Amino acid sequence: MRADALVRRRLLIDAATELFCTTHPAEVTLEAVAKKAGVGIATLYRNFADREELMVECAASALRRAVAIAQQALADFADDPAAAWEGFVRGLVDLGVGPLVPALAPEHLTELPPAVNAVRDELAGSISDLLSRAQEAGLADPSLSGPQFMAQLIVITRPPISGVLDLDPDVTDRLVTALLLPPAR
Amino acid sequence: MRADALVRRRLLIDAATELFCTTHPAEVTLEAVAKKAGVGIATLYRNFADREELMVECAASALRRAVAIAQQALADFADDPAAAWEGFVRGLVDLGVGPLVPALAPEHLTELPPAVNAVRDELAGSISDLLSRAQEAGLADPSLSGPQFMAQLIVITRPPISGVLDLDPDVTDRLVTALLLPPAR
Image (cartoon, rainbow over all chains, first blue to last red; front, side, top):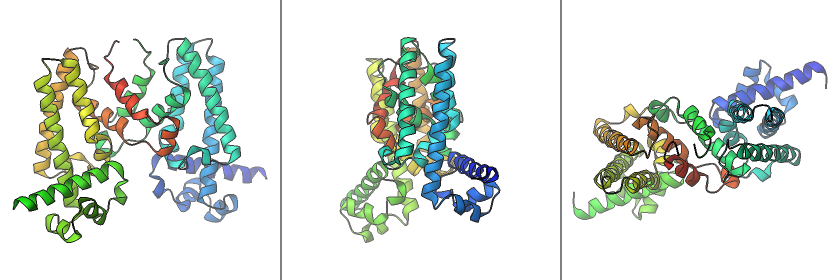
């Protein structure tokens, strides 16, 4: 693929990912994605056969970014465990794990294409490594497995309905901060 | 209203509430509600002009039940603070606060009809009383207001998507248990 074609493909994936983070999935139309990326709808269709294919590429891209965040945290862990652990968790939150998983995950996570599932397995491994280290350092609840921790992070960072934001506009941040409190504080 | 008419109205509200707890709101049709209640659709329309009116009645009914749960907990508090506080929180979870608020709340909670808003204000007062007592007893995070606590409870008990349940089928219960951990544990 030519360099400018690669750039346009990247723009489309980033635009779609941003829309899936901020908008109800049903309202993320291919037209809206093309418009946000600043390309024509024909360019979108040259890159992605359909909405499903675009969603899989968004999921793969987000998973690769999550792997990079986890690897950075693993590299930084020895120097400053608390900062590395918090950086990892807040990195996943900023990546949009709360809105992206409900928007992009198929009915069951195992239904992802094999190439995407391989990245997902790599991420799961990094998360388990990092959680073990955080648990050894007294930074995380020692009773939780990697998948259990991720399930909690996805649930608490899923965008709240507006009525809940009326009750507390900072509810997501407050829940993330509580999740980051060391156990047996 | 005759006794049997009241019973049918109650059956319809309970059936609708149960469906809103277990089914995506878009799939809760009036036909499904009538069928679950074991009455004909004409009976439903004699009781509720439209879906909106039925939803308001479901919200009012759930709010009244929540007030009763809070008042019970306030009455029991002096005897056993920890059991009263946990009973209140788990009572709201069992009532379906997580699915019902997103399903039934209008865009902003203040848009409820005045009669329903009065019950909501009464509930908010009871929750603030109870939370203050729990905080004094060292059972709840002293930095949280009543609305902030409710926002957290609604977020963590909203039904997770199936992919998240693949990661941890018990994620909701685990988050509620964590919310109930005394602070500065």
